[in-house]
Image (cartoon, rainbow, N blue to C red):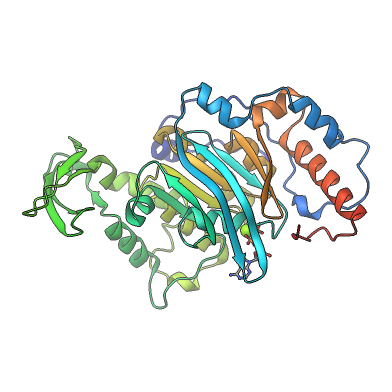
Length: 379
Ligand SMILES: Nc1ncnc2c1ncn2[C@@H]1O[C@H](COP(=O)(O)OP(=O)(O)O)[C@@H](O)[C@H]1O
Ligand SMILES: [Mg+2]
């Protein structure tokens, strides 16, 4: 796949990306195949055997240790997370910390539990047991405000146009679109108190962002961390976002009537409008053409780097992992079975695609010997 240079417009949107964060080489392999589709034949000759890979990788510290050494704080801590659907055990004790700016790529066969895990992290589903801590909040609202989510599947309420849903989303997140000449104007922002749960109003200016706001309700006075800068978006920034995601031409169409690819791009747009610190993308490229995939990949990379955000990317596309992630996490049958840095994969002379192919060749062979099907997610 060729990497298309972002247009000036897109660059404006994403501003300058700092290139210091990623240690991984930006490789663009041509592989977009789904790991699950590999044959169950014995280890292929051109692949390094998984046991040899693991031996080579054993000399490296874990991604958590590397994060700690570099002073990165955990933003999400997942402890012994389990999820059952009746008798079906989908997550069987997931332990996993996510660190600020250490972007995670998650892979695994279909049915491994990847989406279940991302939906629980996103608070859309409840776990059966276990615990998740978020560094930026405790209440459901605080947590969801700091997160952006694009899901694999989406349905919209009937009778709403794309523009209505965008407006609704802006309102829910308290975001005001300001014209360029309004930067110095005072706006009355409604802030909902996290303690007394009632709204209060604060006069704020887009040009001089403030972060602390005391609830004006009598008997409350609770002081909030509320970043006003996050709550304004300039008209030109907003318009270029619509362009990057190619939503500008469909704003007056019914959300349920646009194509799958358009819905997909619209979903990601909603996921990033409030500039989240933590962004979950679950199979983001499904249904997109190559050009949109490349554009969105570039956009997400710049957004994360510019914002100091952290990405949680679930995908079958190894190019996306290579381009967007620092860390590769493999989920199999409801557990995390491998967790490494992408730079470590490069250090032993492989790329993500080859590494993942070796894992699946090994896994499929093991399942074959045990008489299990490739999609068997039981113990
Ligand atoms: N709402 C549900 N009810 C019952 N089973 C479910 C439900 N959602 C997912 N599953 C099952 O949980 C397993 C994991 O699904 P999922 O997390 O979507 O996997 P992945 O995203 O890795 O492909 C699958 O066997 C799937 O059929
Ligand atoms: Mg899934």
